[in-house]
Image (cartoon, rainbow, N blue to C red; front, side):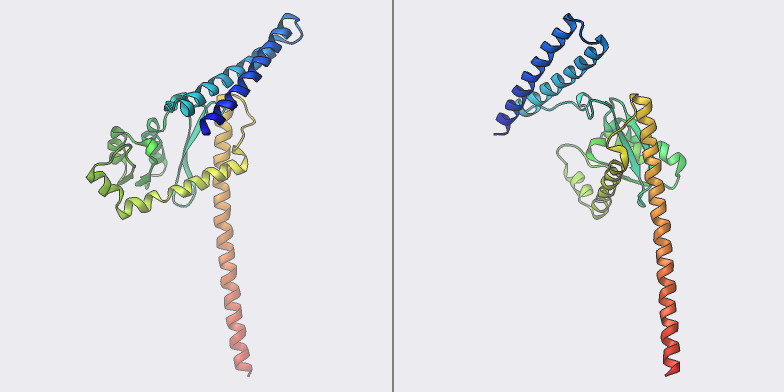
Length: 245
């Protein structure tokens, strides 16, 4: 059923693309539209054709699409990686241009440790794993939580099922929360065009997120202080009432 639904979707989109191509041909022959606009439409036709091919490859043929061929956005063909501490502050980020996760893990930690020498434990997803990465990260950190890809040996299972490994790995939910917060505060869509604009927008979004986290900490401290004052005030009033009686 899933394959049939995808095939029907592909057939429908391909019929739309054929109509668009015919329209472009008519407009071009009659010189009824600017060439640069037609070329822009053709650019998106190529995007659509690539997505069709990838859907056919992944769903219908059941094959795996290499990470470097994946496109996360047809408007901004790049993504970003963030490194967050236990308090929610984003320590480092990197815009990845045709890079896989395993190519940035070591340099992300190296850059973060230059600014935050106290960083000594870090947890990663499976996508960051490679034997070389694990070896290099162990030189930089006291503890590396890096799930191994593929079948695990008995020793790997023992490591990844240990209480400390599992506890540290669970903190990934906090990173997902940070990503969700970035998206909810404007990073779901970048209004700037080009890689330079995208990098600038991501950096500003990260800065805004950190300011928000800082503001929340300050606010919570003030609320806690205010509650303490109110509690002491109630205790004094209670004592005065007891003495009066």
